Length: 202
Image (cartoon, rainbow, N blue to C red; front, side, top):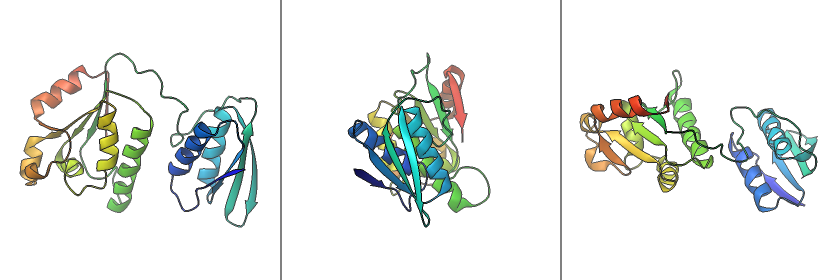
């Protein structure tokens, strides 16, 4: 039986790794090993949403989730779970506006980790041809040395447009270090916001 060891990994990685294993070996039973309640719950929900049966055995702090083909159950995935397939894109595009190197307020370290996870999960959805705009402190994300470049490169390969505010790059003296996407201006950003099907700001 195939084993996917997700111990020590933060969400959504246990869900993503399990989903990949199911896609590669869908007819074979597998065991996904996690070490926290949130990951256990989300892996179970993912498996059931894809039509698999699950059995959980706990040993110490580890949960062994046996996943086998079965009858599908209606399950609503939580925000950190990954859908089996990307939903058809609505007419128009979604614009994501990222104005800082981190998500939310409070711990900057946590905020940076959340943004990294968000972009990684966004790349995993397989959505195509949406737009990302980076401004203010978010300009650092698209420049040399950014740990988020691999996720941005995957999005760009899927047809996403990535743009960074030129005035922001100038302010932070980063224009020569831009590593991905193009330079834009506030007029163009306003036009994108005006014409987008949906705008998501972080």
